[in-house]
Length: 273
Image 1 (tube, rainbow, N blue to C red):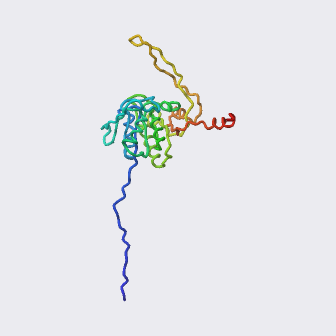
Image 2 (cartoon, rainbow, N blue to C red):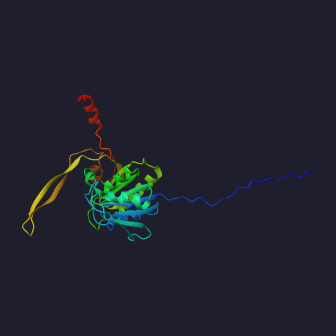
Image 3 (tube, one colour):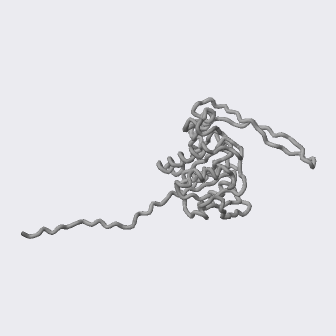
């Protein structure tokens, strides 16, 4: 009886496929030595390859300013153990631009800005260097988020901010947001265990009732010091101001298209141009 020839299919095993970690660009507006940026890095450093490019000094309130009249300088620093980091002489927006063009030579998977010392809810988003860095990333087709803790103190407790920053970054990496997405995230300044959760919100209509205090310096020269009180005109329970006042983390999706589409439609019908 003839023997039946046994055939076996042998699957060749090649070298294991290398899974590339997402590249996470981190910046801020309080400066590279601020506790907030260190806490943000600690929260997300194991979720990808973190690269830091941040201002060499505080740049709060710079908005979307860019440097055009003086040279920009980048210096590599060893501020964060095991993390590639650079300090920049420019604005938060400059940091994002230089990071993409001169450091990474590619677009990172996401950009994170913060954790800011102080609120960036409501109208603050217009003035914020933290949020302008995030918006600049979205302009460059990089999904981004800006994080702010409602505590200006250098001794602020960042435990809750770290927890929710990590949670949001995990969701951003998992769900692959649109490349122009920007999230404005604010965290109440309360113990972590008292935070009730997150709310997806709209930006409240609020502003500062401002005043300039007039003073005289030691040389008898007049100068002014800006002060103001934050006033909320919006009583909606779906706003960032309401969420924060009620111990929720507020998450507001923002955009850089400032077109008022309702007014555009109205003018198209009434101006008869």
